[in-house]
Image 1: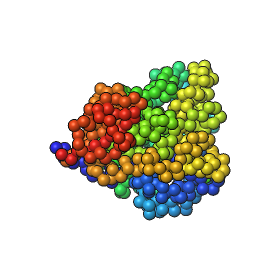
Image 2: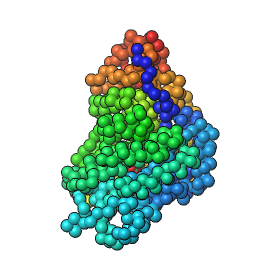
Image 3: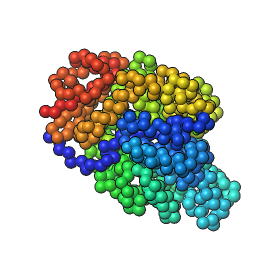
Image 4: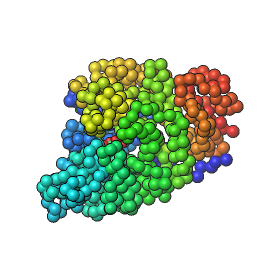
Length: 558
Ligand code: TEU
Ligand code: CA
């Protein structure tokens, strides 16, 4: 018998819904989603049954990277509304039993943030050491590091003839966390938001705040630049800084905190998300979404395979057991749509495979995240022209790799269709009216033309929709402690087609099996079980097999 020894916490029992505000709902017809648009749709989220909303950044920003470049942490982005709109949204969310987790982007600011405007003025400016400035090496960049958004990670600033570090765009200079004043400023700002009554933080690339002080060249990655990750991820002081943050901010409130920890390993995650609670509640790891890598990193049209996916997912389940808490996600605003990537978005199999993937993830141990539109089975955008893309990462990569002859334009367009972040950023599909009911104006990014068939209104009217399936999965998690706290054990771990596992708690066993293929697959798992079927994406089962993309969950109380 597996007894429940796991320490209880509200955020372990929660299901989180991510909103990308720019693409969620536009209330004033300017084509850009906004806070009043979110407030108007809170009843929809309450109906879905989620507990928490994670808001991608809503702070003042020049939008070089859609709000991940913040110029004022204590004001709302003009296009999204006002602080009054925010306060109303927060109060309404709480009234609808929804908590609000804010995105916290403090590895870097915008170059238009007052700190950086000062910092670049002179070498003796009081804000100089808020950022990372280095002298040129032989008249060039201080080292060979590449930016995540193409090109060098260093930008030359003529005013002082020095370079500043930017792991992302040159409009996102990295903060210098080794400077105690930077930490004071960030912790003050976090306390200010906590005093407003928010319920937590999702911390953008928080694994990158402590850099290798040697700043060594990295191994050349794509014939162009050196790897940066090994010298900026999980750096020498990262745990010390998070423990300080925990002491000075987090421990004073009852928060959900999730670190976006690029480059995290299970060993590091055990520290970031340790059960003693000295750092964060949980982290996002990326191994399962970084399974396929081509010659130029993430840019490939190769599909991930179950035989590679399962060991990664199972490893995280096994390794964190009893030591740290997992987050569970298939997609977010940086990833393609799950049904297009891991499932089958054809008309015949879209609904079945979306439900199967949801089952596979939501029955695991950890806190599940749903990215807006995932609950409708929204698909990749499949834009045909580079002009349709808005994402800085996609546009820069397209130019970098096609212009230096590394990749043909045709190949790069195919990769973008599979992998581009804009696949997740097309407007939320509310109904079958013009622009999917997202805006009465011109949307800032094209709407996926399949909105006439795939939209919230249609799904709310269909009891067999993906929406109601997610609603049921969420309700099950809230009803059965075994789904939250049960111990995980993989089954059929050699199968190339079926993902199966069981959960165990207090004498109960939950058995889950998912067919990742469109072919019927032999499966004897359920033949000897006579427990209660909690959820399934087929009404009729066939003995001894799982049908195309079939998912079944049986609870045995014996
Ligand atoms: O993303 C961090 C990150 O690791 C990115 O490299 C991201 O995974 C990449 O786009 C996928 O190839 C965070 C935010 O989620 C992202 O939207 C921001 O652009 C980035 O930080 C910079 O703030
Ligand atoms: Ca708007």
